[in-house]
Length: 478
Image 1 (cartoon, rainbow, N blue to C red):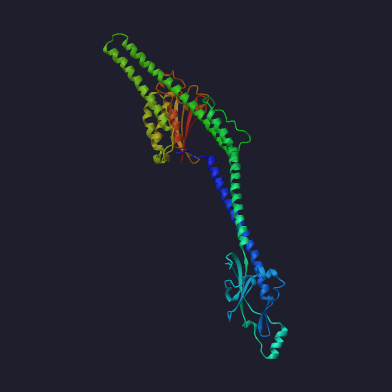
Image 2 (cartoon, rainbow, N blue to C red):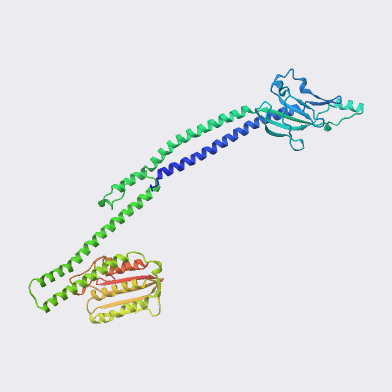
């Protein structure tokens, strides 16, 4: 499946948006012009209807149409006037000269009110008409004469239906031309808009292409260098470029740590492997007795155990680097776990003539975490204090509540601690590997403890309260 294109998506969406706006604008313009044209025509028809309705007079007991008297002097009325009268009682009709013998549709509104509608004229063309009910008017002189005769006729009793029409073909022709103009204008505008929008999108996306080119051409040795971001870069890309620079810096740091880890691991593996090879070469260099072979095999066995421990610690270090899953977290008594892990070390402290001093709060202190990871942390801290404390010196272990946290401290005197206490947590770090009591240490235990604490949301760091003392502080949210 082809990957979607931002440029194509923007172009399509902008084109659709512009097209919809143009259609709405053209439709609104067309409807507005149509309404204005028809309104103008209706006003003209209404004026003609009002004029004709005032030209019906009741005189000498009969109705006369005054407009008929002006036919000779008003040729426009003869040629273009389209109207018709119907006397409602008798059904008689009177037409304009232009209708000849043809009839208009007869209609009016409720109760004779004016009603407008589009009709088909007798000539076959389209037209617009208005129909209404009218009554003849009576002059005051004529009303006086009717009273003298004793025969007064109410004009309301005589009603006519008047329909006045006008040809609307010219409006339809104008609207047809308007539709053609709007359609052509819309297509032309869309074409011009496509060219302009396409160019605008290309220019707007150019910084993304430049940034992509920078990232693509960046070599392994340039990962830690910042990206070259021009000042005119859009604000949205500034944030992206900044985050990319941070990510590249982190990647460079991770790669450096990876190289350091591999280098240290290779160094640590080389020593036991070289010892194993030297022992086997020495054993095979000449014929030996069974006891001599047994001694060499015991040496090889110890070296293999050391290699196995190193590999196990390296595997654990790789696994612990991820956060603990929520389902693996549980509530447990940290004091009980601490006491359980400390119990096997009490005899070892006595063997090395170390004075164990404990200050642990009584009672239960519940925390949330992974008990197995907590055991790794305590075992490594106690083992570190056991192997690196001066013989005869004290080892102080305290645990208690403080400021909404549980704080556990493991302190012991040490010879020439590192300049930076956090150096203890570096992978494969051993302060003095020449000491016999530190040969069993692979420099991974404290790194495992730090990663285990971070995986559970705990904190672990080292302090040097005095020049010859080291204190490891574990803080756990309650």
